[in-house]
Length: 90
Image 1 (cartoon, helix red, strand yellow):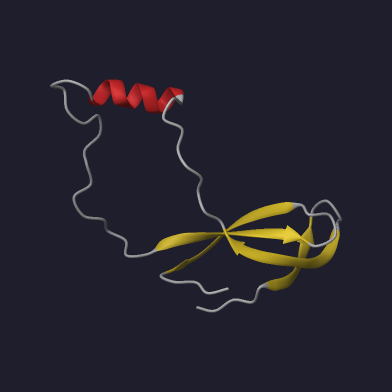
Image 2 (cartoon, rainbow, N blue to C red; image 1 turned 45 degrees about the vertical axis):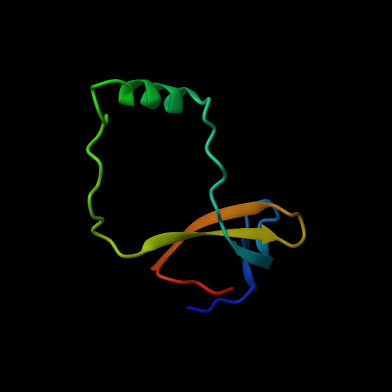
């Protein structure tokens, strides 16, 4: 699916509809020293095995793409969970 690079959308800071640039949100790198990651690594260690059952095959063939909108006037970034699409072109 193709999508325009800019669109008019409501900005919560400006409180009006402004032109906003659209980008696909990408998750950052996980921190290995975060508390949850350390706890999960501790549970996986040794003879106990995996903490949760490992998923053999996934049921869904697509993922929901999260869109990030940037306001042109105030640079406020807002995110919105997009549609379930295989491929999105901006």
